[in-house]
Image 1: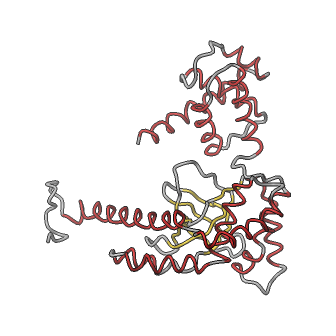
Image 2: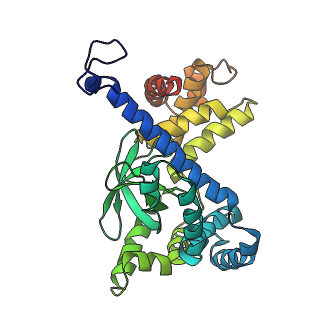
Image 3: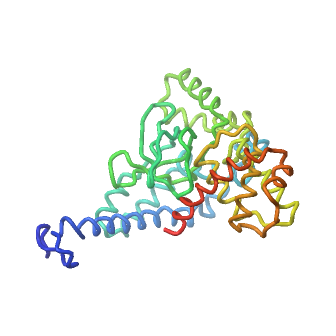
Length: 333
């Protein structure tokens, strides 16, 4: 066995501890992470079982009665499923874990699984974001955790997030989402203030007890505030509608362009006065980067189509171009 101070076997001339030892540690973490992800995914693949369908249907019925005027049935079912597993029929989850513990051979994975007996519901505000994790502040307790990101899609500071969490096993206070990871646009800040006020009025309940007893109330408050399951603010959605409708009217495909514009809006949070200014800049950007079949429109013609000045149009065209360079490099990696 190679020692930490021995020359590395890769031939770099460095000591093993300064070279491939760290790479091997990363590899072990990646393997463990994949194993944990498989365990989580197989749970949702296997459950609920047929014998649980009636009980689950009862939960969905209760949730639908309150939320069907706000949310699509598919989203209500997804939220209710997590409530069913982790608040109403937690024995399904614990029984599944017991079965998995008998199959696991990797000690580090088993150690993590042993901390998974009780998933916790978490509602927090994103205060910082890096490549792998979000730093999130619990709105009721102030507890700050590091929550693993599930994709490289931009997450802006200031949005709120809802999910059930479990320790990820790699560091203290680091978690992953076992359930749907739902982000709420910043349009709904007042809802979270109301929810905090409601929590403070029920001092006899812990945060977890409160979140369990007021689960439907939480989503009801969001619905009353205009939330319908969307991931974009009203302004961001308005920009995307302007771009999509313009390209539809001109029989052009909009998928490639919208993917970039969506990330730009969320990541950069442009401070525009009018939605159409960004939309017009996006059309020039898309045309010149061949993201749709060219319309052969010059800057003046695009500006007239959206009733914006060339200077406004070009401001967001330039911002999108600059953003696209970084966006493209991430995609290539």
